[in-house]
Length: 264
Image 1 (spheres, rainbow, N blue to C red):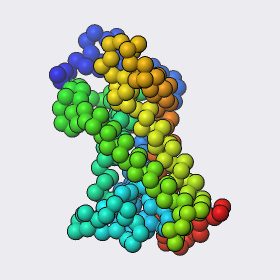
Image 2 (image 1 turned 30 degrees about the vertical axis):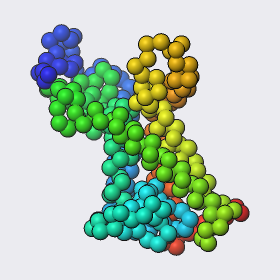
Image 3 (image 1 turned 90 degrees about the horizontal axis):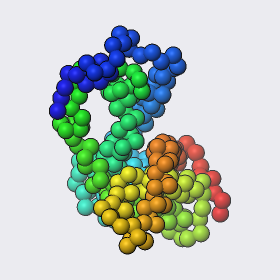
Image 4 (image 1 turned 90 degrees about the vertical axis):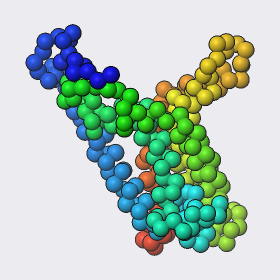
């Protein structure tokens, strides 16, 4: 329920007129998040709407995988059921990985502080006079995070399949490995670490259990995911950068700005 008494200026809180008594540069963290995340959103949006330069055989950009729209030759491994879609093929599947990240518990903290200033930092008053939590639109959509996690698992499997295909050359023959293959492999590992360290994953493998001793397999999975969960925020940022880096590398290959570094 919304309340005008919420926050550090509420009647039950200490009467301190200053916005904060902190002497450190508390604003650096939300500012860095704002700049980096905004840069990624701008880059990803531009690339998604371009609708071209996303495939350089055998590499397919993760922004366009799976390519289900009107795709260039060789880019579609699952058919083109949305060939008549008038916009970029990336927009068909972008909602799923984007929805997973935007509803992620770690990213909520990051962009709540950096974009909505709710609150901008610990011990710093927020500018909002009322607070309704995640009970109203649009924040109520955050409750769909668990369902986006299931979609993220499917996306991870597809990206893993793309990595396997990246070990083929332009003639679809096995035995190829280039810098693009290595970058895609690192990217999919980071994406899986981010996906499997998710709080929803912990609930999926170990939630609603009253006796762990009666479910030894799920308990072992839960402990493994719990260890990954400690570094969930780190994996979130690493995978964000790796997705952009892989797409940029493939883009530069597609436009002929660079040549792929071949290992064998």
